[in-house]
Image 1 (cartoon, rainbow, N blue to C red):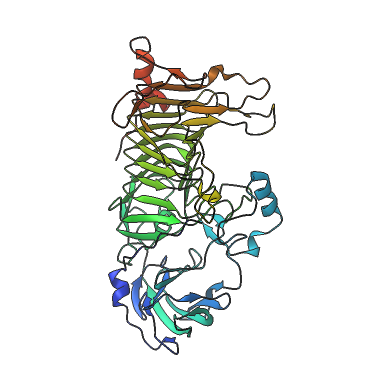
Image 2 (cartoon, one colour):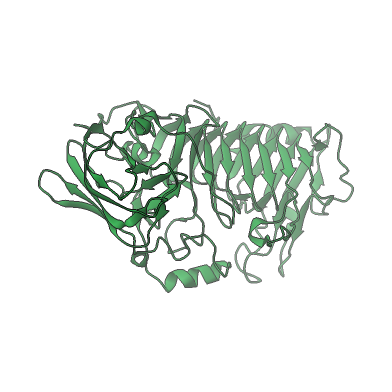
Length: 501
């Protein structure tokens, strides 16, 4: 299993947190964030305990948060409840039908549940990274202008020396009031110095359709959270720095199996949204399998100078998307494409097929201009044995395996479209595309697997003489109009002229 990334930056506020008599253990006492008796805390805060050595996570005990004014119980995390049917993200079976049967045999309430953006997800109530244990309260339980008291039972955490940690009277007070709904810019900062501590907190604040475009600015830091943006418009989410703003979560179809409604397996989802822009940060999914970094279902979505690190189906797309100067890494069917997607100067790395293109009729599909495709010469991660060997998959640019029984609607997606203009490739097999598994009655005449001027990384023309017979090589001057049209976002994106904010 892929190891989680461990982010070493410790916020200054956390380093300066002062421990009072609130925490009792036979050995050391951890530093707290928010600090004991802190004020002006954002209501979307996580709770962090930092030790001098990695703590041990227990399997029982309660974390409770009370309103300090009237002693009302505000939130409870019960460590005896498992996070998910498969907390390690690995299921013994992997077909879609088997995952659905697994979900049908259990209830959401059998496991940890957090409501994120109006949708129930399984989640980890505590994540230990190095010397820090981060406690994730249920979303939207804390309010502005209230004082809270935290109690943590001894079974929840132990120090490296084996001493039980008990928190008896850890208090903090939230900010007196929320920002006005008319705000045009909000700041997310993991150290508590911004308007929100979490990306989801800022998204929950955002009006469904602000009169003026709202910018959510994310300061440098690690944001380990499932992010779910649904039913909103006219928002830009911008990172301070592409490399050091890391948003992500360990999530996949085993950890959050299908239960009807929207897919719950991505780290970051955009659902039924319009005019959303993501700029200059990284999204990670720390699990393997069917594990998107990003799923988009929306219109006029801009992905600008982003880094997306997922596994199978690392980027799933519906609607209209403009992606520019971005990098995508995945483990096969790295783009699961239902959308009209125009990629300019993008880079895709994959250990398996780069795309499974599922373009619907009367729409455009995956179009790449001046983009790069690099095949990663490694086995599919879920097949890796103890000695490092495993299944090596074909790194074709696009494939059309039969998806369902013969004669089923879209069994082969006969209108699949992937067009490459001036692509650079490395490690792509000579056939370039395929297999195309023809069900009875399948007509491939509408499949558009087209290329113009595909070269290697040094700019030398690649040998296309063994390309799959369904594919077509475009050339000038005969195909000049087609090449020029597909080089234009407006043609691909149903007349939309994308503008990067």
